[in-house]
Amino acid sequence: MVGTTLMLLTLIYPFRKRVQGKKGKRNPLAPHIYYGLTGPTLVVLHSGSGFASVIGTLAFLSMVLIVLSGITGTFLFKRVNRTLREEKTELEALAKLFHKRKEEVWVAGCQRTWGTEIDLPGEQEPSSLKGRELSDLATREGCEELLNIAQSMAEVEYAIQAFTTTRNIFVKWIRVHTYLAVFLFAMVAVHILTAIYFGLRWLP
Image 1 (cartoon, rainbow, N blue to C red):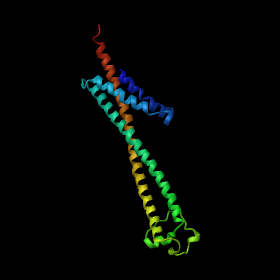
Image 2 (cartoon, rainbow, N blue to C red):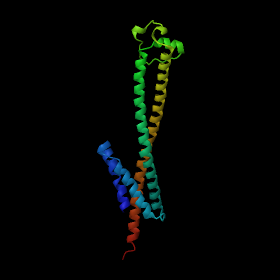
Image 3 (cartoon, helix red, strand yellow):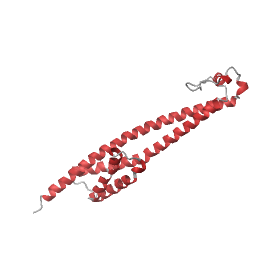
Image 4 (cartoon, helix red, strand yellow):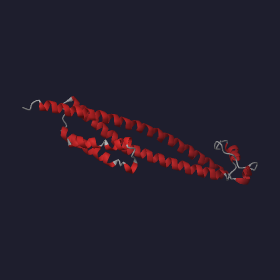
């Protein structure tokens, strides 16, 4: 009973998040994790590693899957989000550096030298640089630096796409976590009702 009560308390977090719209510090995740680990632990002790009924077995297995999915979501999802924010910050820094270095070199000359398109869409070459020779404004090293920055930006953008895809997968995984919770509490309700029904039948 205590284990089931603690598992029911895990519903406070999604209720406050989905219904009341409370997120972040207004709705901390820590109590949800505490109840979600302590409750199932007590249920495991209650079961005594024995499976006497199909309903009880289904409830037990769904509980284990919920705990595993919750652990996966808590640690990996947070790590993916944190890495994604870091990658976006790095991309912004590279973009600013690219624009700064681009003002210092002759982009058209670099493109002819390396045979590579490194200009950003919508960008116009400063009028003060038009018609000037590459040797007057930038060295080969300057063009190499500009090209390296552009390549780094492309790599970070690719990483952002990969982490975004991973995050979307975890969003779907959280839905699985929710569906499992609905199934679990349905099985728990049936398990309790059948226990009461068959238990009370033998009372005088």
